[in-house]
Image (cartoon, rainbow, N blue to C red):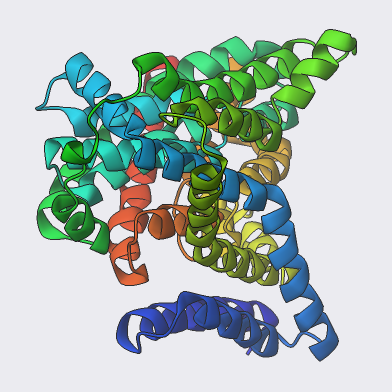
Length: 448
């Protein structure tokens, strides 16, 4: 049996173990993911010392990226719920979109917010709004979760200034034509968002989570005699988003000029700093400044984030283990020998995404891999290169599963078990990827 076949076997066995371990054996996802790391390492023939080192390194790396963001986002969400601000936010959203379409509103909000903000951070920030809308409208929590997740995911892989599409455009030599990439990206991602929305309506009728039961039993409106103002309620969510978005735009436009303004925006727009500022703006939501109550709410938020942190960290360890075994590299090399027009970058990106978990890595690696092939594929024009970025982006969302930190953020913040996560979120990303590629293919027929 060749080494490449062994690597694919390691990937298949580990994913099956995660599904069976969490869904059938009811083991905690943290333990299952750690064991899956060892399974991959031993099957792939990694030295025993490297296995442990890779696991701890991957665990720490993903928490360094999003750990504090998760904690701060959870604390903000707790304060919004305890103070009644989440109810005010739900009231505002219902007034804007009507009581019939909150699920669509969730998808559109995700679509817009994820253009400048990483989908992991954005889901954390917007979770309290989603929960309050479920309470207010009685809609399915699963439907609202998938609508938000797919809305965020749609623009994450297609529309600059998100780093993945920007890097892919640079690798393909179209960084001076980002406007073209943005135009195509907005169109393709809109269709992907709508596909995710329609899927969310379907799964909302067939699946239920602990969050559904909890929020429908939790009648909070009567607990508050007076709700906070709309301005104070929206500030802890909108201010971090604006700061992060402003940082992305400024760094993209002023990438070569460093001055006090760009340094200040860079500092304030860092997701950790932006959410810390958002936390401070949530303090006035208390009816009166009560340090003891505030500390109690912060403590509850920290406790709520603990399980999410360890599972997200274990997911990062699993992703790092797959990267260390070079499963994605092997798939990329095998597939690069085929010439299939726009289908080739899509398949390579999908294989890399599924194997190693990161959409950004998939976008960067696939674009570097297919750049020498553009001429033979007939994609060396500016439009061809832009559509290649779109095809790679469609592949880079196919699929989000256990080795993707976004999968764990979505499932854990929504109290969704792994089995339901695969059936709702993972299938949603598969549908989005396929729909997006169909749109890209049609655009290719029109413009190439």
